[in-house]
Amino acid sequence: METGFSPLTWRSRVKSMLKVDFRRMWRSRVFYILIACALLVPILMTVMMTAMDGMESVNPQTNVVTVLKGPENAWQNIGTLPDGETMGGMDVFGMCNINMVFMGALVFICLFISDDFRSGYAKNLFTVRAKKGDYVFSKTLAGVVCGTLMLIAYLVGTLLGGAIAGLSFDLGGLTVGNLVNCILAKIFLMPVFIAIFTLISVAAKDKAWLAICGSLGGGMLLFMMAAMISPLSSTLIHVMLCLAGGVIFSVGLGAVGKLVLEKTSLV
Figure 1: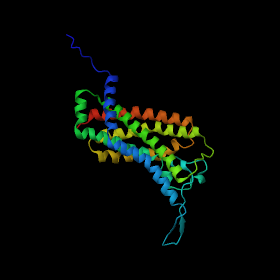
Figure 2 (figure 1 turned 45 degrees about the horizontal axis):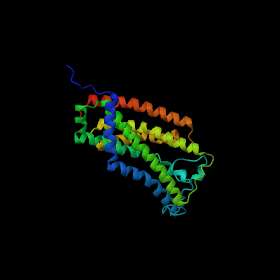
Figure 3 (figure 1 turned 60 degrees about the vertical axis):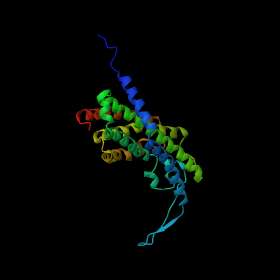
Figure 4 (figure 1 turned 30 degrees about the vertical axis):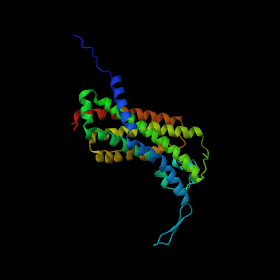
């Protein structure tokens, strides 16, 4: 006897999961706080470092005078131009640039997943309809979208900060195409980081602090390489390599994340 019900297909299950996750993301305060931070950080950094240009500091022990030199080019928030001297020589921008967004995205994905397990939503979800692989896929995609929007916000903040500080937007020997490829490479690199953060978060479950600490440790292994993999002088080769890496990591670590959920308790 036919009941009139047909089993849910993978497409319908994932569509349902994505609909729920994206609705939650659009209503999440953490999401908007992270976007706002990604927008404001490059503005504040650029304006403050420009204001400090020429300030002197004296070492009381050696009496050595150090003159602070601010940025001379707006693109310093994105990467290093071929001529390093045009970047103002500020080491702080070597670490505190657009690549910080990768670390910012971990806050979203760790809190997003831990909230599922802390509230009991995940256990109920797996009981009634969702499969472990669908869950990992949906969370990974949501994290990539959040990270991509943060990258775009950081780029906008860089433009605004450079305009406010009156910095040069000269790309030197580079082209607009290099800049576009750089941003695309970082967007395609985002799934690599999100896949790592998602795996650690599903392993930590409701322990958000453990997920964040573990993700910071795992992310830092690749953070130093991000500038080399997606430099300001990026070409299509960099874009393709980042795209391939994003797909491989997402699929590989996604499978591991599914296995972790299947082999461990959901509470």
